[in-house]
Image (cartoon, rainbow, N blue to C red; front, side, top):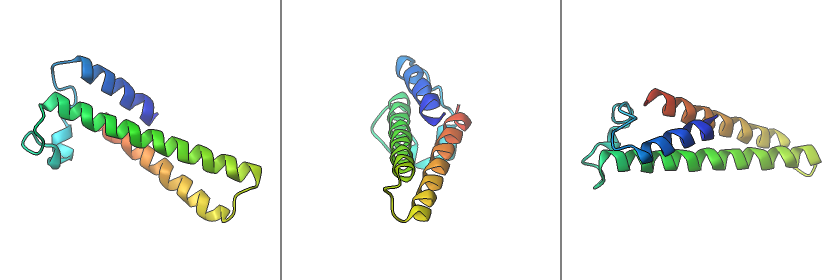
Length: 102
């Protein structure tokens, strides 16, 4: 969900000249126009690209851990399950951030 929502937001924002995520500065003050020497639209594209990359990494991580647990080749299974839960929570937080800033 996080990857899909972010990819759609990223592609639409990249093709638009207007700021399609006006709530983003309210949630992340460090992304104000003065913080980076980019236009507001370029900042949004950069942030959405980073969110997409994080969601992709979380998906790959949870897939690899789940596959290792399923094969039985994983040690410290409870710790790996905890890592999967944290990565899933991160993906959910990224998804909510993307939706709230629209």
